[in-house]
Image (tube, rainbow, N blue to C red; front, side, top):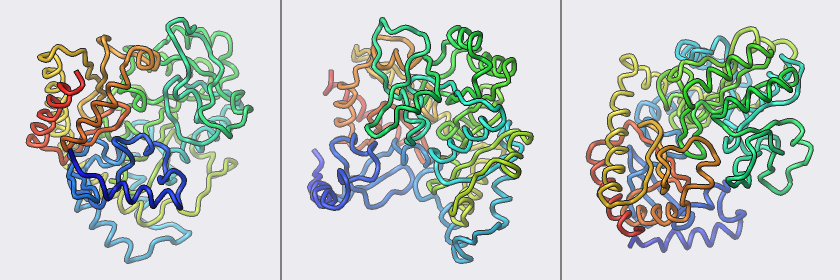
Amino acid sequence: MPDWKRSQELLDRSKQTMAGGVSSNVRLQSQPFPLFFERAEGAMIYDVDGNAYIDYVLGQGPMLLGHSHPAVLDAVNAAMRQGQLYAGQHPLEIEVAEALVRLVPCAELCRFGLSGSEIVQAAMRLARAVTGRVKILRFEGHYHGWFDNVLISLAPPVDASTPRTPSRPHLMSKGQVESVRDEFIVLPWNDLAAVEALFAEQGSEIAAVMTEGMMCNTGAIPPQPGFLEGLRRLCDQSGALLFMDEVITGFRLGLHGAQGRFGVIPDLATFAKAMAGGFANAALVGKREYMARFAADVNHSGTFNSNVISMAASAAALKELERDNGVIYSDLERVGADLMGGIQEIAGRLGMSVLVQGFPTAFHMSFTELDQIRDYRDYAIHCDKARYDHFTLEMMKRGVRLIGRGIWYISAAHTADHIARTLSAVEGSLRAVA
């Protein structure tokens, strides 16, 4: 059992000056409690008590290259000595924009921000300006940021009898205003028939369909065959825009994002996390005819947008990902597939009902009798989340750090040795929770 005494002392201290002792509510859910870390390198992260963990949290996804990647740190160190914030343009932002246009299928023009939550707001504003409409279709269990108008139906109350028809948007926090419910229509994901029925009745009122390319924050749920294609068709027919939130999937599911992997090109897409190697940066990209409105009659501003540090980090990270035509992804896919297969094999050998699904760079593990999770309802109704919390704690005791929601992120720094040690911890932890 690891000693977490120093972390506990620091948490008690931090609670005196920080609400809950943390700066993000997501961290309140950590096992065994919100730990304090002092350094991270490659696939490893180290807490203040000297415990080392193989890390599959990876900063909640951004560390696709691994922690403290030398190319990213060197680029940032060199650039920041030239200045940090100009309130004006600089060549690095052109370099990053050119990379995005080269790599992302829908990208013809770009705008930069700092976070996924923030850049989603720019996408919604633009979609409403382009269409002259207000309502946005979104899906149960999808996360598009913590802002008032998008923290909706992330975990709505459902059971087996809940109709698969448009539901009243479920607010996720005290302090959210009731009026935001009027801006959105919510449906289960992966149910094209439900979307078609909605568009038949209200298609002329919908400004955009907002979706993750693969549902990531609640399971790693790929789109069913034809679902994204159906969304594209319905948007084209009705004059709505298809907005793909690739804050998580961008560069994680492949060099060309989820839209490249699934072959469905949206009108607008947002990127963050993996595009900057652990630094704060985000981008909205899309078709020229729509994005050009930012230079005309749609406002998008920000003091820290395209700051030198963020752009230097993104330029270096994207260069590493693109090197040799993206050869890094072959290694990522191989390592992740070995881990997915190993977990499933161990669970089967122990006679435990465990599902591992998704893609090698971002997959989900759950205790369930289902052979596939198709939407939020499958996850909410049929997955044993309490047992997974116990499993996460057992893995921490064995030196492996996981996200409590069940999603595992792989980095280019994970090796065959890390996978072997992880699978040993998986077997011990599964036995402990059996």
